[in-house]
Image (cartoon, rainbow, N blue to C red; front, side, top):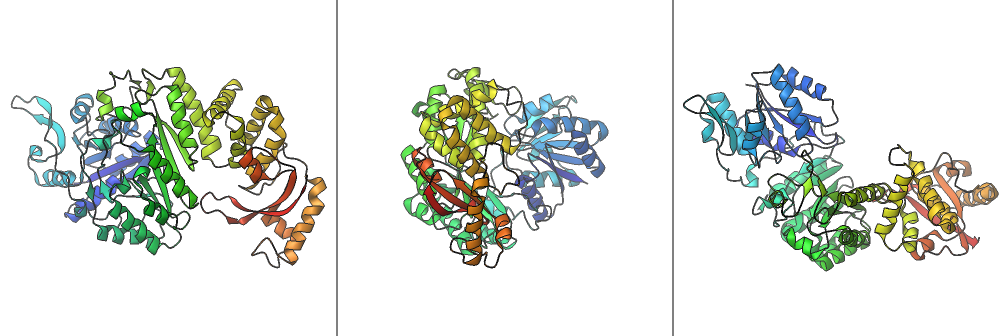
Length: 585
């Protein structure tokens, strides 16, 4: 019997840990299944054809909020071309309404509810050896009554497995080159946030540290680029978290990056101090803030100490070695546009490497779904079930926040405008007001509907300043020049950059001196000035860039800066910048 587990991932670089775990557990129990992976960017016809050619007798899809729509369409067509094939679903998107899934989808044979390792293995035995599906816990299917009428039936909740009983899913890294590898050292979450499905499962289960260390050694030894822990709150157990962090530091080979989702307010001072000692880029942290509004935090049943959170984020940032990603959710109860602005400004001023402005998704099975009417939540009827408006947030407000989300993504999260944004902060009442005004400018000029090249984003920001704050336009042109060159050695200069003609001779002298007797640059001994000029860019600025960003005042002393592209910051990949000369502008 041919059984095919099928994943439809959001991106090619993603992989599906659930499918790998199910395959690994089944193999450990003497059962054999095949798996196939696609992405939501594949043509549906290609997914259908790929599955059809494999001729499965039973197929099980791994269902999430981002792929359920495409899976439904593919599965419905698959039933037409392989009518004898049984189609099963599993995963969080179908585990909380399995009977409804069966009722609405006639092509569906059954649903695996909750964790599927043990459930799938028992199903495989029933399918191959015969027996009653009613004896398999954790499934919903159509059972036949005495009068030949069928009805959807749920066999009941299955007791979760100890994590140590689930074999390591990565015996080989075949097909995982250049992709993110997902890993779990725990299941469950200590919190009960009403918008999150993790709140439904009670308690935390940890994988033994001896197993975790052995498995992490496999990733490090195989030089996997990134391992993303899917533990819901990785540091809820301090000893467990510290043991893992200490281990990856000891075994680090300078290649693998580990991503953890943590609660920053749980971090202890000694943990922050330890994190500051890690190789830049070894660890990155994702931290859910969601809101700072007290009434909102209470309504969503969240527990968080904002002072401790801010202390931890700032403490980690001092190490200059860890990428921090902070999340906000718009559309939560009791949060209007003004209170959300306060949440936004609070998080922005912590200066994370990424600020994710997300929108509430009313997930099936989460407590928020049951409370939707009480809070006046109006949300999309189809996945991702994103909020459209609430009692406190109008659809106009949501559209405004969508614009701000895009501006933050382009101008902040890209990391390509650090100096420019740092300077502009001194001229706006708040970060929110700046991004709001920039978003409105994009709409006014019809810029959202256009695909822009990277340099065009710099030109648009300069045009915005020329219109809104013309007195800053000269300074901004230089800051944007700096932001461009710190990322790459441009092949051609945009029109807004000043002509370097009068400075070329001075630059030639600086590079010639460095070529003959290096004082500022290292590793270029013996390199001819012409060749050095292709590896290092020199630029004259009319003021001290660092001072302008820090104070909002350009000053009068100009400076020659050298951008060394052979030496880059491992965290943000910016060129190493050296001040070669200071003089009156």
